[in-house]
Every structure is written in C-alpha cells, then in structure tokens.
Amino acid sequence: VNTKKFKPADKNYLKNKLGLLENDRIVIYVGRLAKEKSVDFLLKSFARLQSPHAQAGGGQAKLKRPNTYFVIIGDGPEKKNLEKLAKDLSINEEAIFLGATPHYDLAKMYNGADVFVFGSTTETQGLVIPEAMACGLPVLTVKDRVFEQFIENGVDGFMVDKTENEFVKKLEEILDDKNLREEISKRARIKAEKFSLEEIAKRFENLYKEL
Image 1 (tube, rainbow, N blue to C red):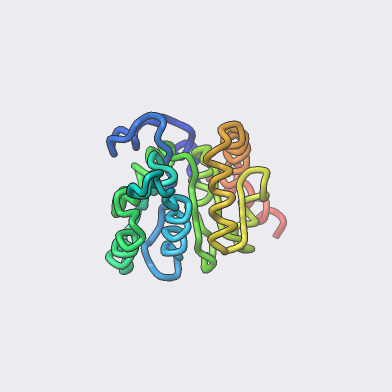
Image 2: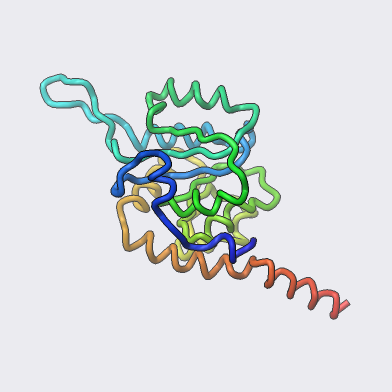
C-alpha cells in the first residue's frame, strides 16, 4: 500500500461531492460488483440498519437513520441487480452507486467516510482493506482468515460472523461511538504502515539475504 498516497486527509471531499451535510454519516464499500463480493449482504445489512420506525398516528414509517448513507464505489456484472435490490429494500435514495472511480481519487473517497464495510469471503488479499486503514478509516468485515493479516479484531478494526444481525449490531456501535471510531482510526493507520511499499520492500530484501 502506498501509505504516502493513502493517508488521513480532507474529510469533506466526498460529502461535498454528494451534497451531504457535515453531520451525515457515510458507510463505504470499494470493490468490484460481482456475486462473490457479497455486496447484496451489505445492502441487506444496511437496510436492516435503516429499519423504519412507525410514526405515531399511523403516518408513513420513517427511516431509523435518515442521515446515514451507503456509498458503493466500483462496477461489475451485478451493478444493475444491486441497484434493483436497493430499490426493493427501499434504500435506493440512501444507497449511492458512484461506479468506477480512478485509483488516484480513492484516498479522497475513503477519507470522506465514517466506516468501511466488506462482506466477501473469497479474497486472496483484499487490498482495499489496508488502503482504507491507511486512510485512518475504521474497517468492518466478515470473519475470514485472509483478513486476520490486516485486522486485530476490536483493536484496529472489526470482524464479525457473516450474519446480518451481527453485522448490523457492530455497524451501529461504530457509527454511534465517536470515541471508538477515533481510537480505531489511529490504530488502523499504525497497522497499515506495516504494509507500506517501503516495509514490504524491506521484507523482500531481508528474505533474499537469508536465501
């Protein structure tokens, strides 16, 4: 990870781009929109996070978190299906599909969010996770051995069982606890430094010397 490029920076770029308010919350996903990425799981979890509250007097139900948005960055064969799913789940206004984004703009996107989410269990590396961590973004993933190389659960990120209940419970905790987000953010950046271009180069150099 290029930690000189992916680093904590301006947090207003994404909100300004989307016309959101300073106090609005952003959950973000970056990656290919394909079945194996389980973006449908993330959308269903976000919909549960937004489970409507019935209004007194029988009025139309209101979203639980009208100031929370799910920004999805990436493209792929499942995009249309996922957009339809968002509409079916009644979160099509809160789930924002931005499509493919140039790699040089990704750091600004990460920095504008409050939490990064990832639901895939088919990764060989999952590079977007240390990229997000390098930007000081709290990361929430489903449990998978691949992610254990990046995340110490509860210390510099979070991993939960792949159930909507568990995922939503932890997501709510992260969104509601500013102090927790700040602590995880600091530790995430420190952990990401271990995967910087310079550190990985040193590891390879040492390996060559040993051989």
